[in-house]
Length: 263
Image (tube, rainbow, N blue to C red; front, side, top):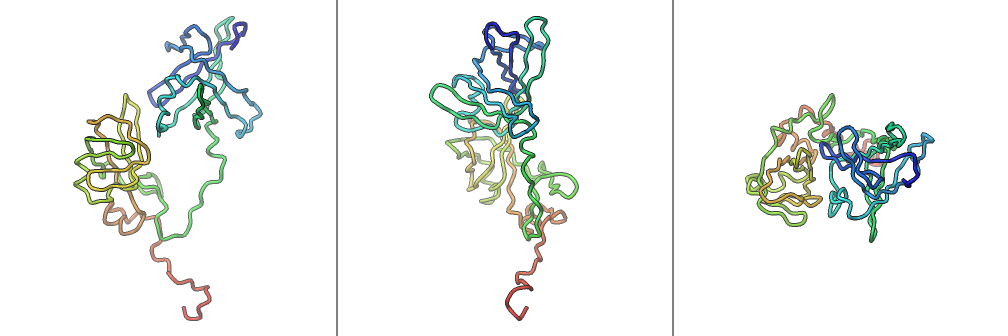
């Protein structure tokens, strides 16, 4: 905002209980008891047509902005919400100008572009339809009517990280399970009240390979949840949940409408 502007804009980036607060003015701003510091943020224009595809917000920020530390090396798994406010200088009236989430960060030499998406943007695409299939289409540990409904806490294995390098991480507790037990599952841990999560690609002995680097120090206690290959055998023997199996394992192998005259 320019020096002569009638408004001051300020941003609240929230990830669970963790907040990053910035204002466009050089002087700190206090709102609802929270302090917003200068962030040197420049934004794109706001589209108020009601078209979600155009209701995006691009923010140009310096690459030294502390918020960007969450995106160096790997993006956070938890969604980060953006709230843009503006405050009228003459009487202190505050308005909410835009609400959304961070959709991604684009890097360049001296600055980064934070791409903000409206909260309903992910709902614009057509959802997946459920097919008649042998494998279970349900998300493991999903809850509700017609869902998986495995109690994930009964499957949890707490483990203390003894080593981490890139996308691999080690803990003695994982060796107690057969190789592949945790493949397709995930890890969870909490940092200052914020829950972090990493998908597990593979499991061999005491070592897991993750989809993204752990970014947690040695000694961190993580909750480990096993993966699922969505077969009836695994559902019954590993999760004891075949009563909720969502696939149809008895689909005939042979097509009755095929060219073979003998069915």
